[in-house]
Each structure stands twice: as structure tokens, then as C-alpha cells.
Image (cartoon, rainbow, N blue to C red):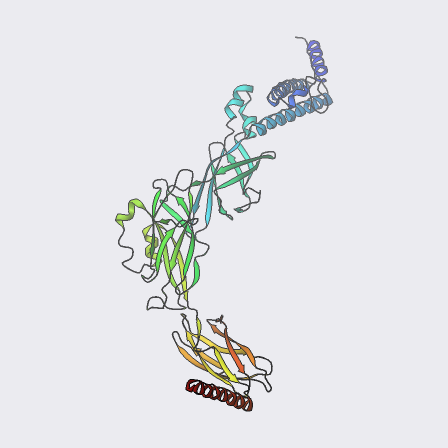
Amino acid sequence: MSRLARLLLALCLCFGLSGLSANGQSNNFNQRDDKYRLLGLKRAKEAYEVARAEYQRQEEMFNRQLITKSELERARNIFSDAEVNYQQSLLAVLFEEQYVTVEGAVKYQDKNGRKHVRLTLVNASGGSAEFYKLIEMEDELFRSLQPDVINNLYVSLLNENGATVSQPYEAKIEQLKFGAPAVIDFALLQDLDAVTVYLIYGSGTQRNMKIFLQKDATVNKVAVQSEQFSQEVELGKSASFDLTLELYSGTENTFSLEVVNLPEQISRFFKEPSGSARLSQLKFTESTHTKKASLEVTLPDRPTAAVEMDKPIAFYVLVIPRDRLNDLPDLRSKEWTQTEIEALGVGFARMEILPRGKGKLLVRATQLYHAIKSDGAVTMSIDLVNEGSHRLDNIEVKADMPLNWTKLIEPTIVSKLEIGGETRINLTFTPSDNVSAGKYEVRLRTTAMSNSQPIVSEDKSVTVEILPDSNILGTLLILVLIIGLVAGIVVFGIKLSRR
């Protein structure tokens, strides 16, 4: 081809490429390329190859001094714009095809009893080979964009209300490569069996997945928790410990409930929280990994050597796989330490009960009715008895008297009264001057303290009747009249009989 012909061909190609705008958009641009990104990628790739070939021709012609430098720069700009458009289209397709999924979410409990979730995330895009075959792109540019890598992946766990329940609140994975899963360990701020995994990655892609948490099947045990693990209980009374049992097992689903380190004087049994049915074993189903139960304990009426007042008693609730019962020693044959219980490899929870006593004040009175004259006084006594399980302190007897009456209570205050103890209080009530005849009421109130708690006994009412003063002259006159009447009747009878 002659030199002139080559020059004409170069000019034609230059004018042909003028169909590309200054922004690098081809005159063959289709508005549907934004909707069908893969087709847009094909168009961008073709425009890029045309621009690259033309730039190479222009560069060769410039080296032969057939075109000016400005014409070469124009071809370079067109090629650069086409390359940028091609890369943008490629990135748009890659970001659209990026996909992150949750491969596993295992809930487990650490040694301190805190719940965790071990989350496994995978890059499920896997489009590298498909893209390469479809558009036959060169490895250098394709791999420079890292289509098999998802950058800046942010992960958090949410509850049903959309609140973050994970610690850390949000975890970041710098790069998630295809075929290389990433594992993140979250501490749960709220004990849940299902969470929402919230993902942000790529060019702002967001994804929510509500998943049911798996249990760690490598640990054949049941986690035990109780919100009321420590309670104060009065002697002779009962207490109920709530239990939440969560299964972490892939082999066994039936477990036995046991209690160790609780004195024999304290009766105990497990029961359903919503009923009175007693339990000795629990069975979990495939759909139910969490169950509720309660432990009922009853203290003796009086303190003993093993059950002392105000001295806490620590004990343990054990949940043992049924297939291991025969392998364990007699659990009630010894006092177990926490280290020994941990070595058993079973689920357990430490409980504590604090026996408390409470005094019970009984007031006894032999007579609550008294009849006196207006110038007399009532003298009586009452007995105070402590029928409770703790010492009574500062016992005081108060009397609500009628108006202007006086009282005398001895002793005024009893400093203490031991369990089963008894003491006597003497009381004297004196009516006011010029008191009218009739019945009057005196109310006795008795208060005390026991174990820093106020004790009030049943009130007693004493009835005092004031008798009217007697008239001696009138009484003698009536007596004379009666004697005279009787004598007259006798005389009249004698005379009547003689006739």
C-alpha cells in the first residue's frame, strides 16, 4: 500500500472514531445497557478493543511521522475513555453479581456462662469462570479488578426489633475471597435462639437474613441458668428456683435432673413451672432446644446443725445425660466442689439458699372480762410466747384506754425473747373519777422486732364493766317489806287452817 493510501486510511479511521463522544461513550450506546449490564459490558468491551487497535495504528503512524502529535493525543484520549468505560461496566457487572451468604451460625456458651455466636460467611459469587467464558476477557484486566474478592464486608446481628445484640456491634472483613470462608465470633448481648444477620458489602449492597442459631453439637450437655439463684427463705417455708435449660448436644436429648450438696433436712423436687407435675427427667425435641423447670425446696421448722440460721447453703443443680447416669458415682455420698463438678463434664448451675428465722408473737390472757365498782381497779396479766423460729426483740405492750383512765404496764418493754421463750406482763387499769356505770373496752396491742422485721400480734380486747353503787337504806326497807309480807301470809294461813 502506498504512503498516500495509508494516510487516507488513517484519516478515515480517525473520522470513524469521532463517533465516540468526549466522555468516551460509543455512538452505539443503548439505554438498556443499565438494565442489562452484561450486554452493556459486551458493548463497552467492543468499543474498548476498537479504540485500542486504533490507538496502536495512530501510534505507529505517528512514529512514521504521518500524523501530528495532537492527532495521536486525540486517539489516546478516546482510548483512555473507552478503557474507563469498559472497566466501569465490568465493575458494575461484578458488583451486581457479588453474593455473600451465611454458611453456619453456631450458638455456644463459654466458661463464664456468656452466650456466643460463631458466624461463618462465604463469598458465593463464583462468577470468575463464567464471566471469562462469556465475554472472553483477558486475564490481566479481569484479575486486576479481583472479581473473586468482596471488599469491606460489614456484619452485625439484630433482634426482632432491629436492635444490635452482638458484641462487637459491627465487625468488618477487609476481604472475603471466593473459596475462603471467614469466621467471626460475636458475644450475644441478648440470649436469643434466632437473630437477623445484617450485611453491607461491595458498592453498598445490603442484605438481611433471619436465621435460627445452631447449637454446638460437639458439647453433649445442657446449659443451666437461674435468675433467682440466691434466695432467703424462712424456716418452715418453701422457695422456688426458676431454671432455664438450653440444649447443646447432637447425640443425646434426654437428661436427668439432680441436686448435690443440699442437706437431707431440706426436702427438694423438680416440677414444671406452669403446673404441679414433678420431674426427674427432661426430653428435648428437634424443634425445642430450650425448656423451663423449677426446683422447689422446703426448709425444716427449726434450725439444725446442717441448717443454721443466717448461714448460706450453696448447692448445685446438675443436668446429666441419661446414658451417663450409670457411669457416675453416688452424687449424694459426698460434698462436691465446683472443680469436681466441672470435671464431670455435665451442665450445672450454682444455687444458694439463706435460711432465715422469723419470730412469732403469741399473746395469752386467762381472763378478758372484769367487773369492778367505780372506785376499784382491774389487775390482770398476759403471757407473751415466742412461737417463731427467731429471737424476738424490743417487745412492747400498748393499751388504748377509755378517756381519763390510767394504766400501769410492768415491764414496759421486754428486750428479747428467745425461740420458745415465755414471759409475763402485769397490767393495772384504773377508771377515771365519777365514771358512769356500764361496759368499757381496753384494746391491747403488742409489737416486736425479729431479724430487723416488725412483728405484730393479734390485738386483745379487755372488757371492764363498772357496777352501779348500791343503796343500803332502800335495800333494808325492801327486805323489811318482804319479811312482813311473808309473815302476814303465814299468819293468815294459820287462822284459815283453824276454822
